Amino acid sequence: MKVATWNVNSIRTRLSHIVNWLQENPVDVLCLQETKVMDESFPQQPFTDLGYHAYISGQKSYNGVAMLSREPLSEVSTGFTPLLGERAIDLDEQKRVITGVLDGVRILNLYVPNGSSIGSEKYAYKLRWLEALRDYLQVLGVRSQESEAASTAHRPHLIPHALLICGDFNIALEDIDIHDPTGREKMVMATDLERQALQAVLALGLADVFRKFTLEGGNFSWWDYRAAAFRRNLGWRIDHIYLTPALYTRAIACAIDPAPRKLEQPSDHAPVWVEL
Image 1 (cartoon, rainbow, N blue to C red):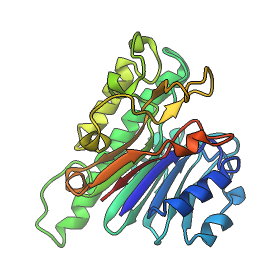
Image 2 (image 1 turned 135 degrees about the horizontal axis):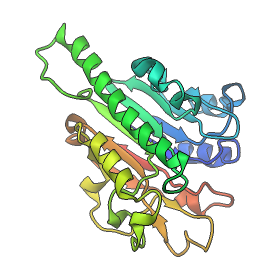
Image 3 (image 1 turned 30 degrees about the horizontal axis):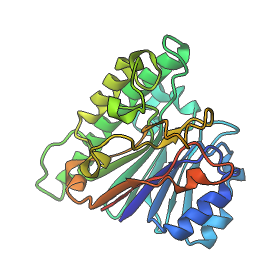
Image 4 (image 1 turned 45 degrees about the vertical axis):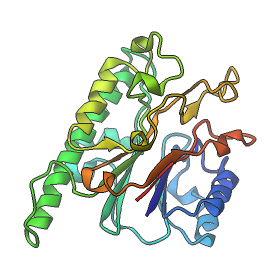
């Protein structure tokens, strides 16, 4: 199974890039963020023509997530509300969460809020969103245990046994993930509070699969459009794929593909993929 994640920064603007990439890289599932389009305007036909099923959760001009899968997904849902109820209704006004199951693997596609600036309302929202993500995963784990208990001698776990979480996390978890981490504690996407909030999520039993295969720095997934950042490789690694131990051991490759960033009018992000 091969799964990729890509913040495309407007699916309609980048449609040809995505279609061409899928033709050259026929992954089983492509998770998209920042689709920036209402569901009824999502360009499904080009992906249907390639043999993909589209699962979408969008909004006008902002945010939006989607999953393109070669085989139908089961147990598809969007947002935190299905598991967290009323406490997550306001968080789900922004379309940032979609999930489905393929061949026993639950795939969770996320677009984590940016946070804007330290101390802002958007920064507080980001921290609350990450706390909700942790709670969501814990409830998901309970549901998973309940379903397994009827048929297997399961071991208790905090999150589903086979879980792949991917997306634009808008957080550089380590200094090695930033081209120049000097003063990073005062930069949104690298503050201590953001890192701690993400670490609390990972502590449930998730590992960064990219670091299983690549330990050195200089590998980034996002480059600002300004200051020739891509040409100079002044980037950040903020697009991640996290796996539970059962999947981590099955991972045979994980990499960032910078090729689409070299195209005209590219997304500022590059695809990241993992193969199990």
